Length: 348
Image (cartoon, rainbow, N blue to C red; front, side, top):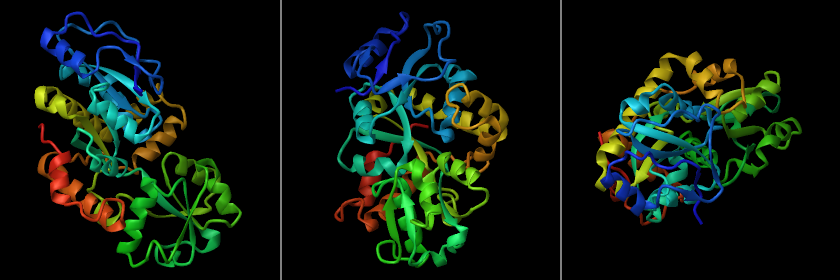
């Protein structure tokens, strides 16, 4: 079953070659209900015929992806020749990658920590850019004495799942700081909205979670937590978090389209890094989980100027793959260099 849904037909002036490619890749209309058009600013006049239509899947509740909305609503995508339909993604990572591989969406964004394992299975999806660093953090409950990485030994860390990026990333991070993630700490799963309560009840002494949820837990706890690390701490400061993927066929047959996506998003992220307030205002048209003021605070926790492309991106994929292989997420026999070469493509 398709996981994409769009109510928008392709503009009538699209050239026949592009129309043929889209038809072969899955057609102009999409059928299933797990993705819905996002944002109340989406409805606009029909794009000029010279623009190439492109369906871009994202999660409109992820504040770190605000620059995707910036690229669309400020006209950056159009400047680069793209008429982008933003589609809100609500399915699993496997479903998203399958949609890219089969052409039911042309491009998508997601966390590299989520994508590597499914890509090991052979989806015909290529990572073409990294967008930013940050958005996963580890905090300790002060009253429980969890005030540093070193004193997490013997303590319990609350997570939303044992297969989640927060658990995987901080398992690697703890190991690099001398703490065995399998023996020295306990990982306990809770519904995300119950993680703060679990700390208050003494069931966990630390939380590894995504923002903005973790931000709201801290906000509501009245300074009960202290940040211990994030996925841009130390050596990870210039490592990507969210990446852009496109279908392998799109890269092969329409490389300039993939390049236009990358150029647009790099420009939008750089603009957002220098215009937090304006970016937050745009994003509030899509998500109202936090206020504009809170979004600005959250943006300051990210490395919005870090965009890995080309060889730098390939090297970062290799580094993550090696860490995940050592953690047991990737298969023991995976050659991380060949894996990176397979899933990465240089388009700009």
